[in-house]
Length: 124
Image (cartoon, rainbow, N blue to C red; front, side, top):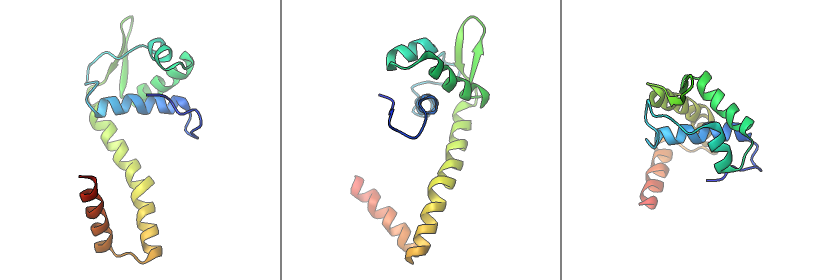
C-alpha cells in the first residue's frame, strides 16, 4: 500500500483510514497492539509527525488508546464505532448524492435496485 500524495485527502487522514480498514478487515482486532508511528512512517516513507496525527485522530475517536510505555492498542468496540461512522459517511457521501442524481435523471427506485442487482451479477 502506498499513500496517494496527489489526493486531496491529507496523508494523515489516509493513515487513519488505513488503520480503520485494517480493523474492518480484522487484520487488527480489538485489544491488539498496533505498530508504532515510527514503524508506520518508516514502512510507508512518510513523516512520523504525519503518522502521529493519523493516530491522534483515531485516539480522539476512541478507536485506539495508548498504554503508557507499551504503545497503541485497538480499543474494545472499535469495529462497531468504525462501521457506524462509515455507514453515516456512506449515507451522506454516496446514497444522498445517488438519490439526488437518480431523481434528476428520472430513475425510479425499482430501476435503481435493478441497476445495483445487475452490477452485483457482473462482479461475480
